[in-house]
Image 1 (cartoon, one colour):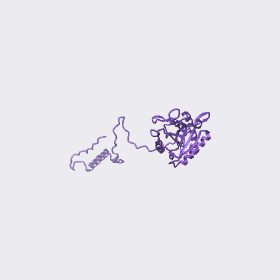
Image 2 (tube, rainbow, N blue to C red):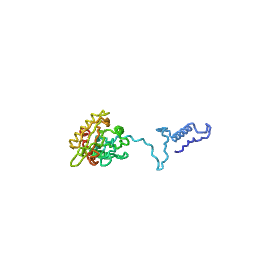
Image 3 (cartoon, rainbow, N blue to C red):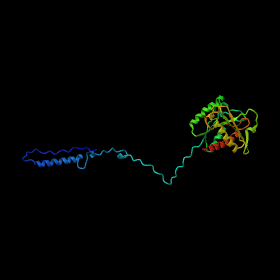
Amino acid sequence: MSRWTRGRLPRFPKTTSSNGPSLLFILVALIAVAVAGARLLGFGPGQGAQTAQTRITPPSPQGTAPLPQAPPAPQAPQTPPASTPAPPPQSAARPVVLVYHSHGTEKYGPGDTHAAQGRPGDIVEVGEAFSDSLEGRGITAIHHTQVYDHPRWAEAFQRAGQAVGALLQQHDGVRAVIDIHRDAIARDVGREVTTANISGRPVARILLVVGEQNNPYARENAAFAEALKAKMDALYPGLSRGIRIQPSDYNGRLHPNSVQVFIGDHRYNTVEEAREAARLFAHVVAEVLREQGGV
């Protein structure tokens, strides 16, 4: 910034009125000096005091910094070019089926009836085949594989029900809740009771079970089971072993479309036969949910 100095007025010698300059000359000289000083300090015609000086910021390392500018005015979003395809519309949410195992240690023969030390048994593999087949048919499957029948088998349904209730709180759109087991028939009934021949292949048959105790959805559970059985009979005759209503608490109160599914038997079926049945049953479930709306 320039250093400004005040203009110094000229000093005139003292004179007497008789031989000095005239009064008019002195006045003219004073006016001239005042005008010169006013121009030097920035005051004059057409100029204001606020524009007397311009403040310039120090140079930046890359050169003189630009003057501050007002932020740009917000612009309206531009319409994409006509050649840009519009995004596809969002598809409706896929239906969800929650799959779990109250007795997750169950196994198929030959061999032990349950996996040791609380490890998941063959039934979890069957649930996985069922879930994968549902996914292939456009249905989201939540396969819950936690074991609940170890170390205390008697607490399995209670503990599983608590976990499934929490899962239902966490996931929207659940259309069905399916607890997958394998049967353990005490009497000798023969392999033909638990095995069907579907398209030339041996397949484990499926029993549907609904519990009435502590179940405000008992009627809805039974109706869902009836729909599943009717669809099995239509698509895969011989696959269904029927429906059993029992005076027990099987967590049917958790969802209107809740059912226990017993796939095959420990003595008479292999895990391969059970997995094949689970894939067929996934087709059945998908068709029933489609008919109910939403698939």
